[in-house]
Amino acid sequence: MKGIFLSILSYQMAAFFLALIPLTFIWQGVPLKILIKFSFFGSISYALYIIHSPIQAVIYNLPIWGAEGVHYWLPNFWQANLIISSLSISSTFLLECYMQPKIASRLRDLAGIS
Image (tube, rainbow, N blue to C red):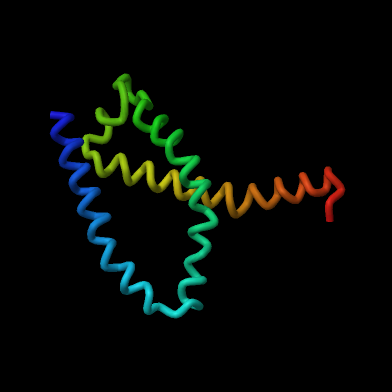
């Protein structure tokens, strides 16, 4: 059953990305000053890429109420992914918007760079 489910999920993801192709032609007509507002998401994408996998591993393997793994306490695959996505995105904002500027400032002060 798991193999079939993963296969169906793969087809759903492929269909989603194929549906994005027409959007590339629509985005060509969007003024640049509107697109610049979305550039923030590009600046946090690497942190999201780095942080989502450890959060996913912890959530999927988290034993709760004596059970083994997330599939015992969240029977719905989409519920688990919603929790993982929420934690990943909020952690990314915390890292990129609050912690990273403070760490960079502190390192600049320690190195004597203005």
